Length: 398
Image (cartoon, rainbow, N blue to C red; front, side):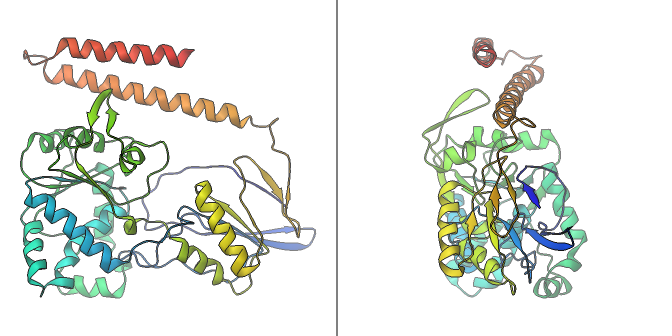
């Protein structure tokens, strides 16, 4: 039996992610492989814990946080409130780059739930009142659609949340919550000096409305950019989290003067502890484990932990490698004749750069369209931006 490590992507709105079990019959023998997909945290308030699988011959498992531990719910709730209230007290805005499905809804739930956890604490109550007196904007069409789906399917939530709903407390609806569906409504947020909380996609700040909010808020030291999810290497979000002093957004250099915070406990990925617990939960342990979807450091540490505590051998395949699933899996040659992966990555990189260039040109076009009947257009600045884009295109073609 041969397993090929390929990448497929699909976008759907669903509650959580899926674990795939595959049974393959070959020469009268049945072999079972399990692919975890993204293993969620066990303490997500709106989603059930990952299903534990009893047996597998081979396990292909994600390893995003293979070397990290998340802070727990009670800690992250308090930290979230402290960060938000301090920013609002300073007259600033909190911008939260949030993944549209799951993370946005969890943040909304967290805001609603805070009053129940610390309602008798005087210091908390003051901070909570600060939070409740500002608008909370969900500024992402997909996040809005996903939130509406969550609201219509509350029968799938856990018993605690069902009881809250029966008592008339909808955890995804509270005073101050507003949805900005149109581009015009989104732009108005950045024209306002009113302190607010803005949740906007994409979560890694690569595309979407979040880039406009960063452009208008990163430079201001009164504001806070609060990250609540994994930031992949090479993304705008990762650059900001790692302390970049300046970043380029729509071709403009923006100073990073805002307060930057990262609450890792909101991630939809299991941390090292729960990744290990998933492995430990098998009654009939896998013969071999393959770690995918992670960075090198995290994968190496998780591999070491698994092998030390279970004696199960672990492999970390590179993209495009294939293995023969024998008793001891054998690495086969990369199938360069079928797919030249270096060329694939090169083309994907070019496509990504083209998309970013198109985005910059669209932004310039929108500026011109909006101010076509006024004298507010900075023509020299726009010409300089177009010249920079032309230079980027020339470099891309070399």
